[in-house]
Amino acid sequence: MSEKVGYALDLYTLLYGLSIKTIKEKYGQEAIETLRKIFFERGKELGKQEIKRLNVKDMNAKGYHIIVKAALDSFNIKHKIVELSEEKYILQIFECPHGVRFKNLGAPPEVCDILLELDRGIVERLNPKLEFKLTKHILRGDNYCEYVVKRKS
Image 1 (cartoon, rainbow, N blue to C red):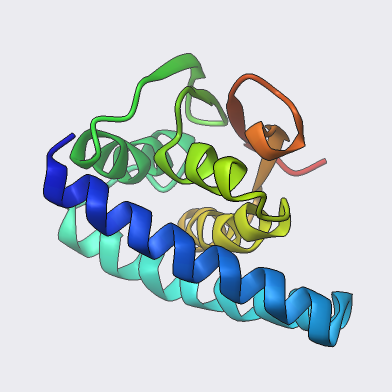
Image 2 (cartoon, helix red, strand yellow):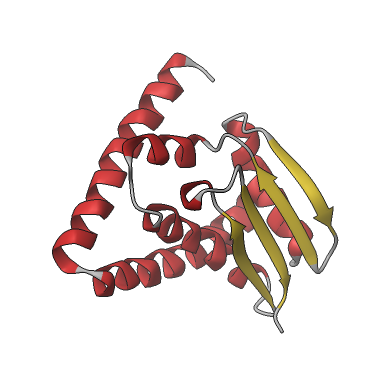
């Protein structure tokens, strides 16, 4: 990763992590839940934009892969696709530039929970019959983060 991108990520992580930590300490879990809702709604808008920008035709788990892969590739993030079909996508992310930096700062896991509401919103925009879940999480002690998109039960 270039030095400039690394610097920008360090600064972003510091500011965002400190903001969420302060909001949680000062206003509690209710504020965290409010932020999650706001990020989810923004994720639906972002999904609409990315569907158009990337010309996504598959309104399913494969379509989400196209969107998330653009982000993974732009930051050169080490990852592994465990499964990819129209109805199921399992992605493992190693050395996540956000997760690793948040962990080093001692940021609470909610920093990622809030950010990942963007992904949940993108998946909702693609196909309301699918759901997004984070099943493994660097900030909760796992060695990698794992995204799972699958049909809602």
